[in-house]
Length: 158
Ligand code: THU
Image (cartoon, rainbow, N blue to C red):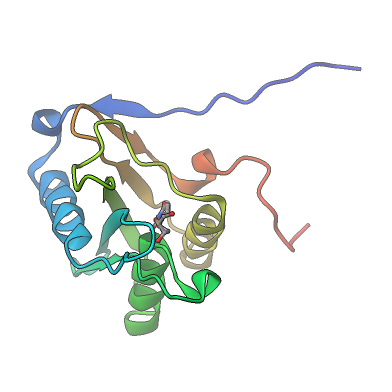
């Protein structure tokens, strides 16, 4: 028997400490929350990603009266990007959210498990690390690759 643990590396920034391109991506993710369709949860999530070719793609959560038919902002955005630009790795993905009062969250939004799984596969299919920026008004977390967000990930490959 041997006890073990996993350490998750991440960097904490304030908005002003970010590079200009990262601030722009956060701004796009914030803007995308205003295009969310969330009449059921009233929780508006926005995502924006920058591809290796420099293109920026954004998206938001899209809900449905048949609840499980809706989709999170991260997957809406990643699937659109992969559908439009199948050969372009995602360099950075930024995520922002507003609560039911319409205010941006003060602490970084944390993506759900299903989105982490899709993020991981996008990273793996392009064999390129995807940086993640989780936005909060007080602080922003940067993870250098999706694998850091999903330890013990499922994979078909041995
Ligand atoms: N949601 C996202 O879009 N991304 C997340 O990371 C967490 C949750 C959406 C799903 C649903 O439309 C609403 O937020 C409330 O759960």
